[in-house]
Image (cartoon, rainbow, N blue to C red; front, side):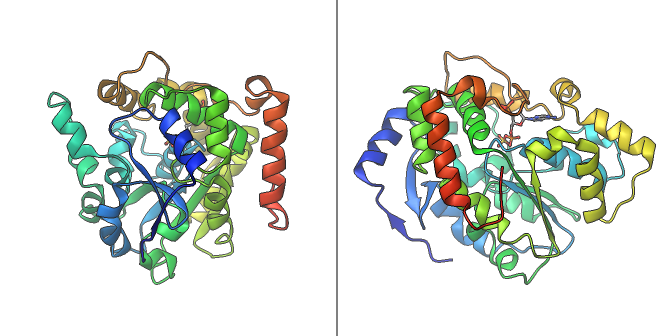
Length: 326
Ligand code: PPS
């Protein structure tokens, strides 16, 4: 994939600088997407990554329910092996592009006391070396995926999880406030999100990039809202997609295992260690948990009517004629 770097327009550049006050963050517009500058260093390795047909990929834009989907997929694919599920999800289901999103060597140099794992600095090679079947998380837009995935040369299972844009924006704001020491107001953040200045944005390009792939046999497109509304149905659909059958008892135990309350208390899946690490790297005055609210329609109480209208208008424009709705 040929990487082309362009300038952000001045207004967006200023907003990015205002909102992110993080010495370890530097964003560029790469092939039309807001990406970490670090991505450039890994783009060849990602492009040429050797995909396997028995891989299972969970893809999303951050804060769409990735962790929830990963835990669901892993449990189904591993016949509900809750004992092995006590191993951290980070190990069971590593984050493919983790090293491409942050300047880990600079972070380590500035914070010699912190524990950085190999997959943070070299996630692509780390995942490459794992035995099959590999369970792989990525936030990369479809067009940034390894060539063998994009071209269909290899056909692993790909599960994309999407969430209402307003709730995704809110969830990401709270998360980044804790882990990135965000500056600026919530309104600034929403403006940044709408303008595509939040990493991996523009938001709808990411979602639609995968939505267009849903016709492929190896792609399953899920929505957070459906998981909230009827988790057993989504579990069944995912099990069928993964070629697994669940008994009624298994379905009910997995529904319980994946409830927000259970996952919040599950140290292998609640990402508390991640929040702790990020806070060590970029101290922030804000406190909070990764498993924060787990609700739909948060926007009703968190956004002004004017902001809601702007998001809705933008959503209508972007989804017109696509067949996708939220
Ligand atoms: S990340 O950092 O991109 O991997 O984050 P991601 O996992 O995509 O999204 C985090 C949000 O998902 C919520 N979550 C859940 N909601 C309902 N039920 C369960 N079991 C669950 N697990 C995670 C999590 O709370 C974040 O949403 P918010 O709205 O912030 O609570």
